[in-house]
Image 1 (cartoon, one colour):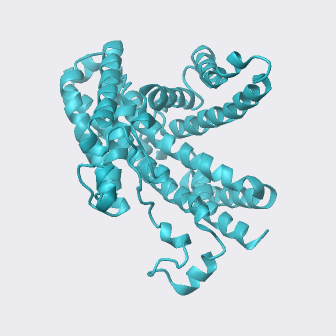
Image 2 (cartoon, one colour):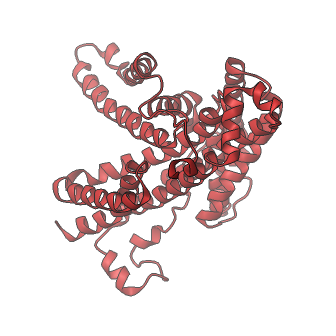
Amino acid sequence: MTSSHLLKACFLLIPAILLGWLVCSSWPWRRRLPAGLALGVALTLAVGVWLPGIMDYLVSFSIMAVIYAVLSLGLNAQWGYNGHLDFGVAGFFAVGAFTMALFVTAPPSGLLAAYAQQWFGLQAPFLVGLVAAGVVAGVVGYLVAQPILHLRTDFLAIATLGIAEIIRLIFQNERWLANGPQPLSGIPQPLSCVFEQPACGWLPSGLAHWLSALQPRDYGYLYLLIATLVLAVVYALLEAVVRSPWGRALRAVRDEEASAAMNGKPVKSLRVQSFVLGAVVIGVAGGLYAPYMVTIDYSHFKPLFATFLVWVMLMLGGSGNNRGAILGAFVVWAVWSGTGYVTDALQSALANVAPELASRMAFLRWVFVGLLLAGIVLFRPQGILPEEKRVSRFIDEQ
């Protein structure tokens, strides 16, 4: 193993340990910590020793899977725990992404100001932008919830889908807000100076020398670490919330709204709160997406792509189960990424034989995802990891 591969493996160690801890999260904590540590170390060594050639691909794949996992957790907070049929995931995702971009970028100046426009640019730190992305998405979610949460099932789905499209069209047409139909580019990436030469001024010289074996193109390893830590924090907070009395009240409203109201639960307030909570988490996912892409525009947030896939992820993993939401995100993103290679191969093979058919091969990816969704509904409607009916940790300890 070369020095660069060793360094890359070190960056993968913490995400692998967190993955191992998540896999063992149903175990008692005395066994969970050492088992998660051992599994994470073993996974890192296996990838570093036997699969060094695909480490870069695994990192880029994992970053997007982590972002989709946060999206799936946000949808789970709405649908899995309170029954909101939200088809507007893409809208809150866009709000979070553009809010992050506006907060962390600088306003256009000089010649660039003639070609790029944005409402403001605060050059704020990454964490400030991430918090702002969640807060602004939550505020939008609260404003959206007031007129539409009296709707149910398919009517709510249609309303949220329309709102997501309205949000996307606002970002597309209002150039003063986020450069309109033109891309909003130059979004800074947190701690990107770590791999630059010279490295960050605050970085100890010994550590800077140790990291000098990596190039700026290896920044994805650091961003995977950042994204995984954000996912871990979101997961831990949601687990604490849904296992609290407030979380159990959300489930009661979802399962039997009339009975919950008869027992004194503020049904309308709880429905709004869960919707806003999901919007905040989805906004955080948008805040992670923008710096990773560096350049974003309205076309990144089409409701079909940024909503339909997330629903399939949650249904496959298991709605009402946060671990299932994360698992479903990784599995479906693997299917989506893998089918991309299949369609590319078929497109190349059919280019000279049937060019019209070859041009349509890209849509075959949706066919695979649709078949996966049909299989879930028919054979595993509860998902891979069904919802836990006993959610109180105190009951388990008795």
